[in-house]
Image (cartoon, rainbow, N blue to C red; front, side):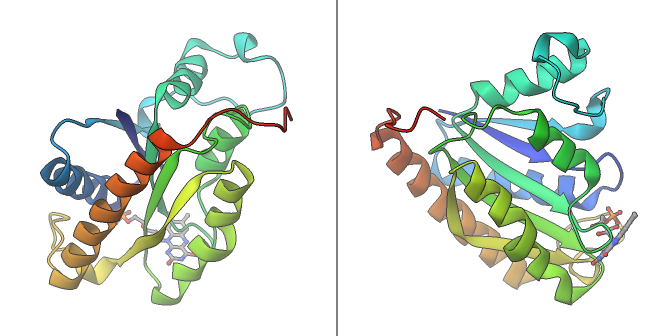
Length: 187
Ligand SMILES: Cc1cc2nc3c(=O)[nH]c(=O)nc-3n(C[C@H](O)[C@H](O)[C@H](O)COP(=O)(O)O)c2cc1C
């Protein structure tokens, strides 16, 4: 099973640091899972405008391909202006609506303001619901104060929550393999 761990920003290090940690915890629960980190910073982004995929540059086509190939996702997002980064939304806009259908997804997010954890509930989850993802009930929101100067996570509660997220995610991943991917709704 191939899981894509998506660092949803082109600037900043903390979401990447959280992803590395989640990767380690998932590996502890399911060493056989294939875990690939995809950093949006490595791509040459173009604005999505509805053209056919083949008319975007190779980098954008590769981005869509990696999402298509994956069986599940960990989405990591920083909070920008009370929302998700534009580059992450642009990436979702690139995907066919069926790309992530019935696939397991967990969310981690980081912000400089505690109250902005609700951005996940109010903005990121509805997008993943539109894609009909199997979004785990747990997500982890980290704050600047949870990291040391080298972006290591120094808060034990955060580690516990990440471990718990990984535990539930691997069970959702297993559940998704038993879920029929056939659908009556072709749209
Ligand atoms: C353009 C921009 C807007 C931001 N807006 C918010 C915000 O509205 N709420 C918040 O909690 N943090 C905000 N932040 C802080 C980022 O969430 C934080 O920098 C990010 O999670 C990554 O941390 P790092 O840059 O130290 O790696 C913003 C950062 C930037 C660059």
